[in-house]
Length: 302
Image (cartoon, rainbow, N blue to C red; front, side, top):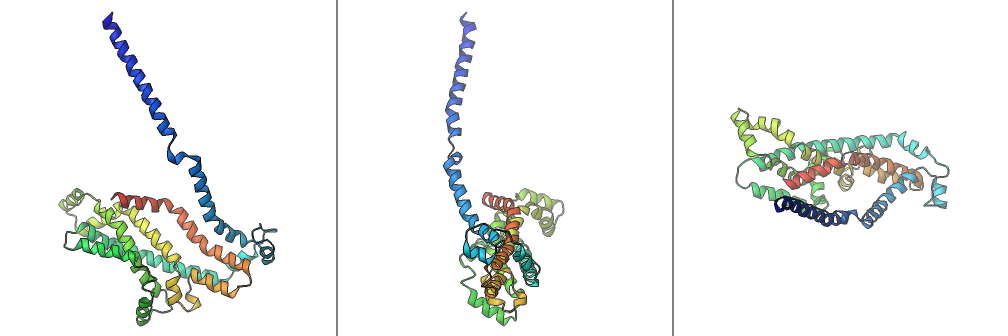
């Protein structure tokens, strides 16, 4: 009789312990700090405060100047599309979009190519002083472009690159390289040495290993630095302000300033031009937001 009741008592004790563990674990899962409604409410308030100016600019482009004067915070009544049509049908806007695309595209290509090559050397080549070289690039993050704007202006003027897109592309590449190298070096350093040794045993050269193995494994980091470089160049204002004086070479940030000065009394049209100029960057960032987060997460893990 005791032999038969012993397993039953052990099973009952085990079941009671499991129920007790479930009861103790359940409150911990139900009371997670990020699941609190207060946290979501604060997040919604912050998002609303950030989006309110953007929505005001976009909606303001659908209003007339009289509507803005009478009720600055009101809705369009009626909705007017002539402000946006006037901007889109004018050659000024599209020329500035083209200049911004050329500047941002060339900057992104230069940053990705040069940053990837420099990061590969720092991360994979055994050499003296690579730690100091990496620290030197990291120190470049402490010097924004505003600090060096006067020396840059002198150098670009001496090189004969004033009033040209090349005069803003080269400095933008230089000032974007520190961030690029800081992000890419952990990606390349995290590649196991066994893969490189196996590739060399199979007869793969350093250049072949770079093209066949390094580039595919570093795609998340490359996409991240490319997006950051593109958005940074697209929104750049201070450097083009000093370098570009010819309206034919203006990028969109300078075009917004010039358009605002030219149509200072036409507030609705200025709002329409401003919303159209920031729309490409917003769409681009929204489409690749997860890529940026994934690349930065990989860099931190590396």
